[in-house]
Image 1 (tube, one colour):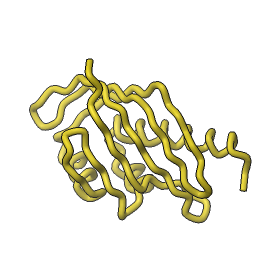
Image 2 (image 1 turned 180 degrees about the horizontal axis):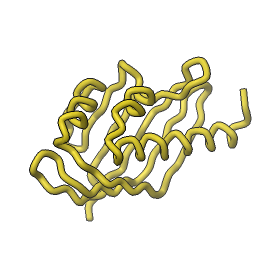
Image 3 (image 1 turned 45 degrees about the vertical axis):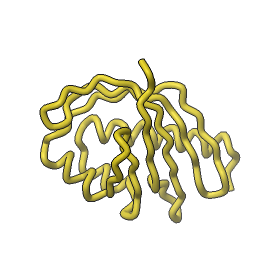
Image 4 (image 1 turned 90 degrees about the horizontal axis):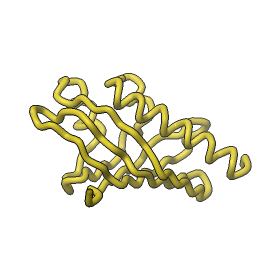
Length: 126
């Protein structure tokens, strides 16, 4: 297996790709990056599936600009655990959003491709 720093760089690049795909509503890229059996725990405590997330972006009801900071990446075998602060600005249906969250994301290596298998976010007190 590659050295941890090489894998951490791969995961950091995957995170950029994922956040860009969300920001650009790139359904094709999101479909590729996110595992079919992913589990999302949204900042409001609700649980969402890949289908729910992609359908929401497909509908055009979500537009988001996302900025990431304070990223930490831990590699455990063929799994990566990432924590980061995300600032989200945009609209969810008709509701304006401008908040900061702490996210935990889990990536798993499938053959040669990293995929998101779990995501959870909590609001930060601003």
